[in-house]
Image (cartoon, rainbow, N blue to C red; front, side, top):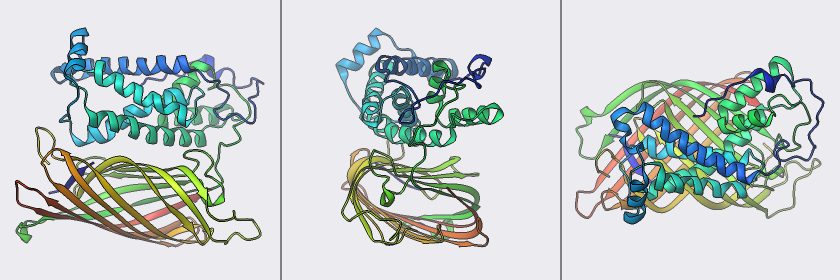
Length: 446
């Protein structure tokens, strides 16, 4: 048994936009959003259009399961009169599909010239619109939170990563592939670049296209998975072996000055699993919203100087595999330190809760490569919808990587999760899940 606790737009590249690859129009160097002036009215219109498109898609593709998409003034009035209730959508729908939907609202504004703070209300507004008039289901508070907060975190990550791919100075085949790649990462931004003519306009890149530092790594390997529930016969313990691939990205370095604007620094972790409960087994984004240096900044003359930053962060977490299932959105406060430059209802088998969490990471770097990571993630959750009770979760992880040549190495990972469930009306339970992985790794940085 897995540990279960919670907390499309079609782009057509026509010949006209790409025919301007030799144009001489130049964007200003201090542009923050790739030349686009703020278009609040267009942003709002696109949010409404996104909801219309998603509603139509559900009608066309879901068959009998798409009855919820046949909205009417009567369903709108019913939703307003009855109000909010938790829904019974499956884990992937609530914890990934809804945040991805919210990211499209966010990027409708972000790619039309608005910054992080000005784009965030569009995620809330689009989610509220969908909950009341986009479907016949009653508005769900869990959907509203996941779509809005998760959408903001995913949306800003998509915007930043797509900026890394785009190059306004490129022409020819390189330009086409870059525009396609950025559109795959951020479809709404690709759509806006198409209609604004930016896909083919040659000019300067924004001055903040790249942060001070970018580091990433790729892992490919296999992972035996085992899980148990208290009281189970040990001979019935589930154990499987699966292939996986993982990508970690460290965008920016707050200790080098990447802390002026939200998500100037963030960490993204992505894992794809073969033959598991879901192909997308992990997607986590931790973004720095505010950083206040508590020490004098480092200098080139003293790059090893200790650095401490008070940080306010935004988190998006989605973990879904045979060993454990955990998702949520939230905010945190903490200290960034560096001493080197280097529950059960119909169709829903998990509980919604709110509570407190603690996360800690200890990382070791050698010649700019991450070689060691020890991590702890603890959560206390009081169930607010599901089986009444409390959950206490501990996830411990240790990863070691051994460089073989400058860009290539091998490694191992061990992750152990424990969930204690305390219920007033049912027996308490203890669940454990363990993953062990062996992999090869590729180091990349800029």
